[in-house]
Image 1 (cartoon, rainbow, N blue to C red):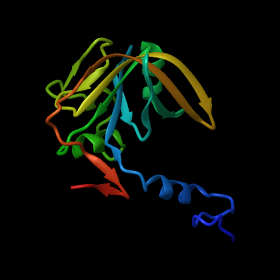
Image 2 (spheres, rainbow, N blue to C red):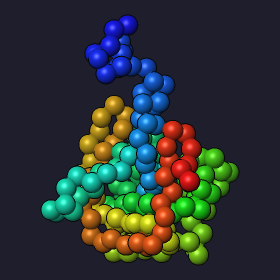
Image 3 (spheres, rainbow, N blue to C red):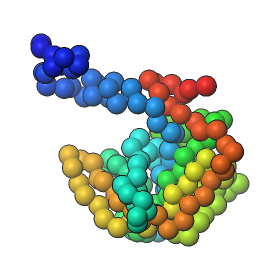
Image 4 (cartoon, rainbow, N blue to C red):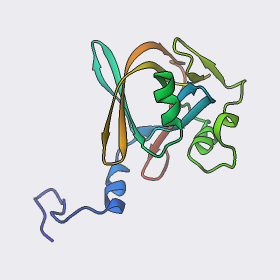
Length: 169
């Protein structure tokens, strides 16, 4: 196998190698939520980023098999919740590591709402409440693009950051 001078392999990239490379970037622990006809829904957002500031627009990547996708499409909204340190158990609830599923993950004391009605985590470092503008599909992944209609969060909170398979201190 040759490299291009950066240490990158020129061979086909397998899924495990891809996820290992993606894990080299530090990301905020993010829960994406919506309130559909069956109640609140959400998932651990591994990819949530801004598209542009004018107008304020965000993008989230959603596995097409994720049950919360129906709530996002049904409601026409989603909220991106950047979690604070100490919220690891919330990550576990939404990453499939818990037996608690569906609307039962939304304890009423931890959640509120902004403009769209999507669940918003109380104490989140930051929240982007979005109206769904468009979805695109690529390779079994849905790219949901939303116009930010409300923002919130606790500017004093420290973020829960995931890097190389664990949380940073």
